[in-house]
Image (spheres, rainbow, N blue to C red):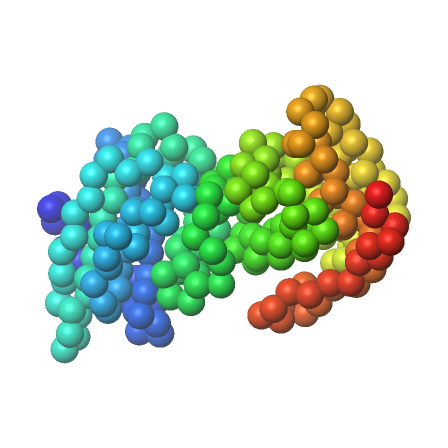
Length: 238
């Protein structure tokens, strides 16, 4: 342990005064990135390691210890992350920390490989909830598209997945201006991104997801409801 490991940062103290969990990503003087989890209860490796793997973080080592905190203790787990992921982590840090808190304190998402999209495309936990809802809906329409297959396809073509979420945002976000013009531009962008995909199943899965959003007429997504719902004109989906 280093000396700074035994002191709680002020920001973490403030967080733990309001809730039972906090996290931060830091780099040491040599530029090595670390993820540190702070909680008022022990962290189970069997819970943390699969989660970090699904997020796509490569962990090289782990150490757990305790720090006195008021009349109790804070349990700390420190994970050394692969150096080559530093740039990705810096670009997605806010959503990674929010995702960790969501999954460890109030899980609203399945712990699957789809969580990698946060690291790959800086997708927020709320956007992941939308993706899971859309995939479940698509799976109802086409049962042959099983969850594992669709998940792998969206990860493989993560830039297209991000573009589909941007299309959804343009279509339904009440703050968007010049909606029709922006939708037309995004549709052209997505079509150009789909053109190089030659694998039939991959093309079908992504195009079906695109069509679902295109034929969606309303959603409660931007009302911040815990359960996401939407209405789709399925009869117009080819």
